[in-house]
Amino acid sequence: MADEAKAKGNASFTAGNYTDAIHHFTEAISLAPDNHVLYSNRSAAHASVRKFAEALSDAEKAVQLKSDWPKGYYRVGTAHMGLRRYDDAISAYKNGLEIDPNNEALKSGLTAAESAASRTRLASPFGNVFAGLEMWARLESDPTTRAFLQQDDFKNKMLDVQENPSTLNRHLKDPRIMQALGVLLNVKLQRPNLDEDADIPDAEMTEEEPGPEDMEVSEEEREARERKKEAHKEKEKGNAAYKKKDFEAALQHYTKAIELDDKDISILTNRAAVYLEMGKYDKCIKDCDKAVERGRELKSDFKMIARALTRKGTALAKMAKCSKDYEPAIETFQKALTEHRNPDTLKRLNEAEKAKKELEKQEYFDPKIANEEREEGNEFFKEQNYPEAVKHYTEAIKRNPSDPKAYSNRAACYVKLGAIPEGLKDAEKCIEVDPSFVRGYSRKGAIQFLMKEYDKALEMYQEGLKHEPRNQELLDGVRRCVEQINKASHGDLSPEELKERESGLHIPIHAILDESVHTSVFIRQRRAHPSLNIVHLEPQIGVFTLARLLYGFLELVHRIPQLLHAIDQGGGLPRF
Image (cartoon, rainbow, N blue to C red):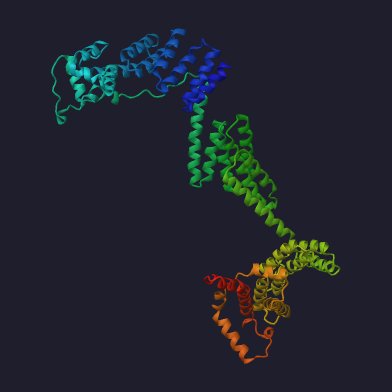
């Protein structure tokens, strides 16, 4: 169990997750408290997050457990360097070199510690004036600096200098620090002009901070880490080749990377992408399946597994263009979405489902069978077996969606069955499929007439007459609409019909009168031929406009009682 926790800590450290590494090493230490390597590794993790006090404690524990291990002294020296205790760091490195005089890490650490100590001494030529409680006592004894001690920023700066005298140069521009320095040195200092200040390098600023420590790992772990690094390099080379569309080179690099590191499933999905581009769909699918299987074994991120499934689905969708079977691709995309809901995967799923529907329509298309089904529907219609007729018309539409006759006939069936909205929808579809098929206008107009929307029905008949001006069915429809409108204008409607008409009136008279061209043509024709019946006029001349005028005037007539009432009350004219 301790080895497992240690391995997790090493992995987290390598990934730069130092906090997680500390957690795993702590768990391992609780299971094996006498393992010096675990304390060393946790010390390195602490140092990497600049917790040098904790790093020093762990390093000293490692030395205590195994005093003849050079790496422990290196950890102690590193922690002292982080705490800027350079003399202690020098001592630790020298103790380690007594055990292993040829240890390069200890030699390098000793050189860095001696250099840092030298810079500190050069940057702080004032001896030990900042050391201990004596500094605060001397500052308290002087009236000027005593007042400064009441200021937090001054105290913080002096604490900073006391902890690391090399930082003094940074604070010398503060006259309070200059005054305090004079008190401590027992001399009267005059602050130099800014342009005369010496540009002394700050030891703290120039010193290189210790970087993340190396882990103490076994030879096998070290080799695995090296293989992983090499695999990453090969993967990057493969990515570069893929971007250049040099697919053969990309395959070579990805294949080598997989041989070096079989735990990175992204390399498999990358190679699958190359096979996809090359049209080698079987190999693409094989790599994707391997990636999914390996990813589940390693408990990889769901996003990575979803990516592999999406790539497999893409390959299956491309194969479906020849095999005419989109179902495997659809199922694969759906599995990918259960792993991770990605917009790209969802888009590909929708495209596959749409392609499947289109393919099914193409395979089902057969005009000959459609005509046979429509004829059977006609027979059932004549027998007044409307439900059966609807079934055959529906099958005819599936077999040939571009046949307007089937929509028109099914609309008639729906009307007979009392399904007016469905009939209206079919009539509109009939017109959409073939705008020149006048039966569609007649069918829609008849449905609107049944709905007592006479103005809309008249408009629809008028539209149909543009395609076939002498169509008797359309002309009869116009006549029926005009009769209903005339009936309303003469007050021949029942109370229920009158209420429906009033609720449907919405055409402003001024908007109708704006149609000056249609109105003037109609009036001239009426004067020239007083005895001419209105339905014998060309539809384009005035039938439609007349009907709308009648509707408008009917609205005005219905509002006369309201007008008279307003006048009787002595008020103004109501607004219409």
